[in-house]
Image (tube, rainbow, N blue to C red; front, side, top):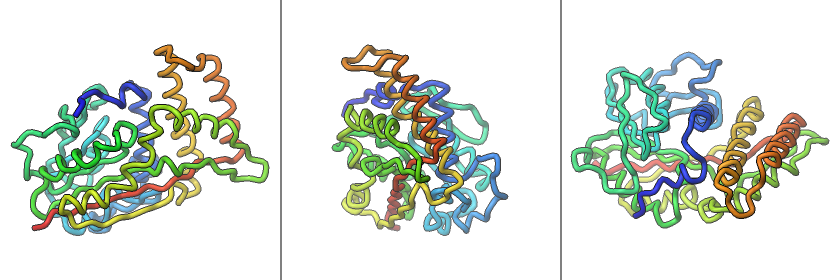
Length: 296
C-alpha cells in the first residue's frame, strides 16, 4: 500500500488547517467549545449538545474502566485525547498520525508518527481498550478501508472497541434556511470538490465500514446523526466546512494544476459564499459511526 500522504497533497498541513480540524472536532462533539458544559460522568457517554453529543459512544464508555488505554489515529493536534484526559485521568492516551506537523505538545498524551495504512509495530498489538478514528475519508482510496481496519483490530485487547466516524460526503447538501437564502456559490464549490480527486472517495467508508467490521469478526453497532441536529451550530459548521473546498482550490492554484482557478477568483467565490451563509443557508450531511467490539 502506498505510504504517500494524500491528505497533505489535497489539503495541506499547516496552522490554519490544524485550527480548522480542531474547530470541526469541537463542533461535531460539542466539547472544547467556549460554552462547554460541565463534565459529564463517563458512564453517560461524555454527552454534550452538538451533532454527535459525545466523544466516545455510550456503548463504549459503559464498558470502560477508569484508566483505559486509548489510541487515536489521524490525531492531528491530539485534541481528542486532550479532551478525554479530563474524563480519564491516568489513562494511557496515544495519538498517531502519518505526519508530526500538527502535533501539539501536552504531557497528558503521547503523540507519535504511524501510518494506519501500513502494518503497525507488534508491541502495539493487543494494547488498547479503544481505537478511535474519524474523518479519514479525504485520505482514503476505496480499496484501503479494509486493510486499515484490520491493522486497527490487531491493536485491540479482547473486548476492546474501534469507534470510526465518517461524514457521508456524497450526500452533503447546502440548504436554504430562509425564503430568500442563496446557495449557488456554495454548490459550485461543492461540485469542484466532488469533481476532482475526491470524487471516488466520497461514497466509501461511511457506507461500507459496518460490513467490513463484520467481515473482520467484530460485533458491530452503528449510529447516524445529522450535522444540523443542533441548529444553533449551523453557521459555524457551515463556515468550517466551506474552508475545505476553498483550501483545496488554493492548493491546486499553488501547484498550478491544469484548470486551477486564480487566487483572485477563489477570493471572490469565498466572499460570495460567506454572503450566502449570512443569508441563512447552511450545510447538512449525516455522520456515520461504526463501532466494532472484539470478542472476549
